[in-house]
Image 1 (cartoon, rainbow, N blue to C red):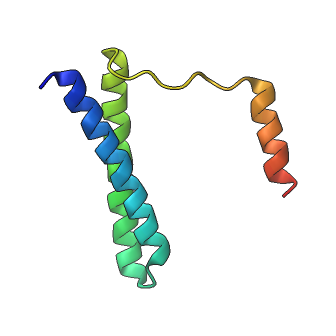
Image 2 (tube, rainbow, N blue to C red):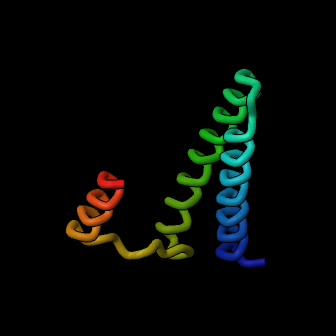
Length: 82
């Protein structure tokens, strides 16, 4: 298997794991368990970002285009006025 496909597969798996940890955190009442899950999720987010930077630098992954400042301000206004 090519490195590109392996890296993208791991990136996708990592994003899914982060989502699963988030879902577990919001359903957890036990504060100690909640904090442990938050720590694990934070570590996974750091790992995912480092892998993203590697994939991006090698041209394996191309992120979405950046939003324009007016688009960002529009979303900020919508969220602020909710």
